[in-house]
Length: 117
Length: 113
Image 1 (cartoon, each protein chain N blue to C red):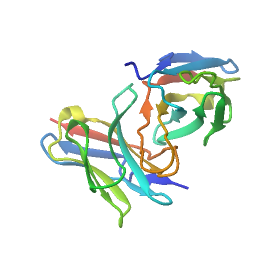
Image 2: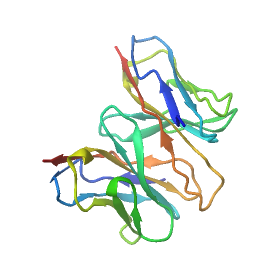
Image 3: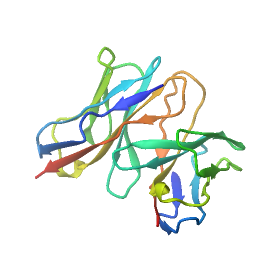
Image 4: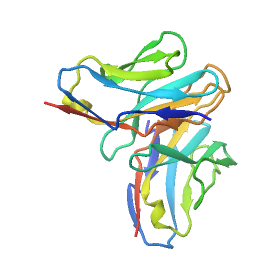
């Protein structure tokens, strides 16, 4: 069971370039998330998806786009990369069965280190 | 809105001594509380969670955490720290009717031999 898999692990981009961070999960989770981690700031939610075909903005969505065509995949697109997007990106997933006592855990991928120069 | 505070950026302890990492939270309604650990250049690993029931929760690698509703705290503890416990620890909270986690800024734990 691979869990949440992200690629690439490391990437250097030039200002203005675009790229896609890939994320796939094999746990049949309906919810998927993209977070970014900056030093001393914890994790901030970029986008999330509650199921195939449904996505929504998190706390810091500007400069990013997502899509969710299948349950398994949730790619994050960076258009016109800027130095402010230098960060570590984490994809995550969980199963949400509704409100109440499920309390299901969110599981994270290994991260993608992105530097924009 | 929900939020988490981890008041200590760093915690330093000697191997074999007790380890405590502090966390306080703010959330509407009943909280679901989580602790994650991150080793260098790795993703976040789930340690333990409080959903309901016993206020003392036991998790992976000998860690435990105590939920205190009156103090809105969820401190992580380990009776005897190991050098291998050196890592970055995150506390997180979500409301019972929400699916988005809010994270603290993290606490770096260093256990010296």
